[in-house]
Image 1: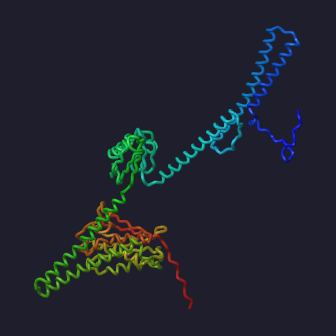
Image 2: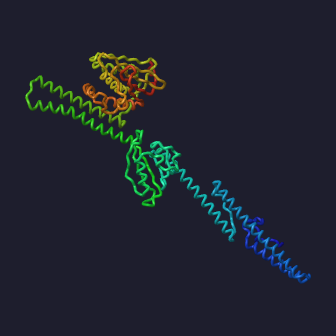
Image 3: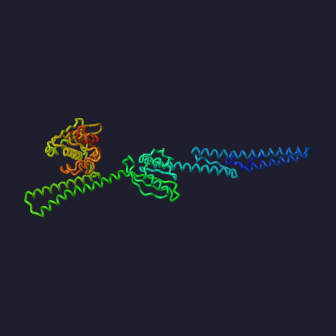
Length: 483
């Protein structure tokens, strides 16, 4: 075997390794053909030197040809086997989630080119599958985080995708609805109609509806996937507009109530002013008219003042001024302020503040305003000679204040709306007492500003009970000043 030249060695003197995958298939085929040719020449020499019959020469020639063909086939199968094993290894790596594994090198012959194309195709397919899986996971995360309900059907009307929100809104069975026709899961005729229209390739109008046995108000938007007769499915998106409709109802009621509350005293004032200017009246009647005008003016002033207070609380424009406060003194101060009206009705207010209630750090002015409104409301709706109980106790990390009366109580249907603006259980009695219908709404906003909550309920023995719960923030003890 001839020695390698200096050009066949690396700079370190080592002989470079040969990659078996890079052996040229044509070279192997040439060696095999050369071997067969040499064998044929040897056969001719043998036939000349050794006397053989024609059949014997034929048999020897066939044996040598068969041996050469087998050698050529073996060499080709070895090379082809290496390529197939390399492609199989690449496919296994891609199937295991490793599409970016190190690339193999192939020869530039026909088999090498074919193997390289197959390997690149496997890598590209694996990358596409990984991209599709990432896109699907991203889409699933987006749908799961949406407040809107989303439902997707194919061209045959079979459900392909739903998110958690739509299952809650429509009462679907979640994943059990997948691959089923939408009519098997959605019983609302309006939804079925817009989906059927979208599957024809048209865009239906918005649909607002309320599901059966549900308090929700929903708006459905439906669109086809594709346009015209080539639609391949439809997408349904549901928007929950319950709170929006409720806020709109409250706004309309608020505007109507403000208009009514202002129109009533203004009408009275205008009538008495016209009576004073059109006809001469005696001094006693004149004084009576002026008192009515003054009373109605005061009522409008209170109404405007309460409206401005509510607007300020809504905008959180009133800052908190927390200071140490003794709750027992605050409650008794509220009772003293209301004592004239309470005494006129010969009512009795019982104050009971538990001794374990500590000094607390709170905005005393806001708490006093809230308590005043609640106690005044209890006095207005309680009969003469009845009792009003104001109690306070500690409950864990909270202070609980209760105001209970012996009045008629609250209808069950009014308990949820009692804190709405201008909402009155007994409208005639409220106006007779000079109320604006905003007192309990102001109470709710004040207590919320103090990070607490207020609820209304009926007492088991009759009467209403308002419970105010406030977080306990003990006031730091004052340091003694050295003499």
